Length: 81
Image 1: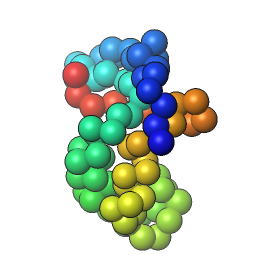
Image 2 (image 1 turned 90 degrees about the vertical axis):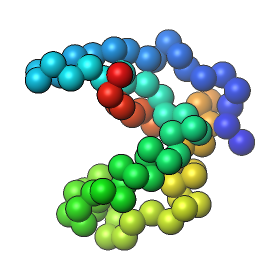
Image 3 (image 1 turned 135 degrees about the vertical axis):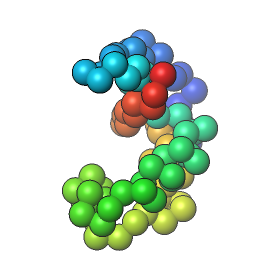
Image 4 (image 1 turned 30 degrees about the vertical axis):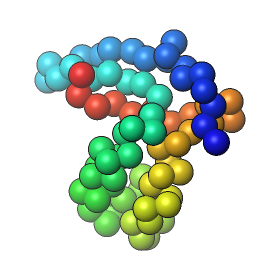
């Protein structure tokens, strides 16, 4: 079960070289749809390099990637701000 204390002190706003604003932050449970769409859009090669697996994650695995116990682990994302 995810920890209740979201590590908001890790949220940072950055600007990419091309001017795109991004917010780097710990992933949240409500990022599930966005994360699933991101993973689905990866090529097979990029998916393998990012996820270290030759197959796309199953729905339960995607759920696990976005429902983090912040006391034991951390996953960051950088959606456009």
